[in-house]
Image (cartoon, rainbow, N blue to C red; front, side, top):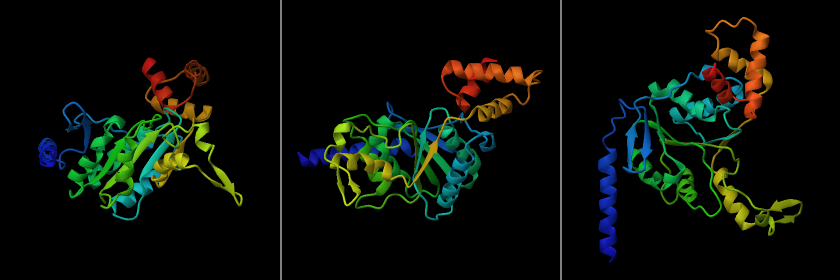
Length: 271
């Protein structure tokens, strides 16, 4: 029975390797995981962005790029969690980084949250390659009872085997702690000598986000920052009355309940 299970596992691993050794990373700068085929597919039509066109997040850009440059130069660096309000440039920052640094050997592999069970297999196949990989997971969060985050924890911190040196995990999320916390989780928490000692359940949930050494927060843009983004998008279009134009842009944002770079782009698309 054990021999049969081992053989089945080896067949699965070999099949995985066969499918994923087809990518030529000298010509491919990004790939995405396809669940049905259980393989990585090279991205041919890449949504690259100019990092200079990301407005209102200068501090986040500076911190992210400094950490990324350390990673590319094989200096100490941290896995990154980009968290905060929707539409504020978290995913765009990753696309812009690929655009800016792919000629320095940076590559990006995007994997959906629901497919994290393949994360260790993917990193096993790329850990010896002479490229620097961002493993990108967009909109990362876990509901109560989900356990797939444990695969991510192993890759972030390593286990008996060191984590791959050429892999940087970058995740985006609307949640700071990724896993929802319940009031009941804190019932066993205690205060000892003025310090909070969290319950085991709370510690388990917080331990995932703690493995991201760099957590950058993104907040809704101000009205003036929103207008700056709109003006940049419309820079090639002659606007007769800028004040009235801004009124229209602001009305568009109010109807959607928020101001962000995403809303500004939607306003541009609808113009």
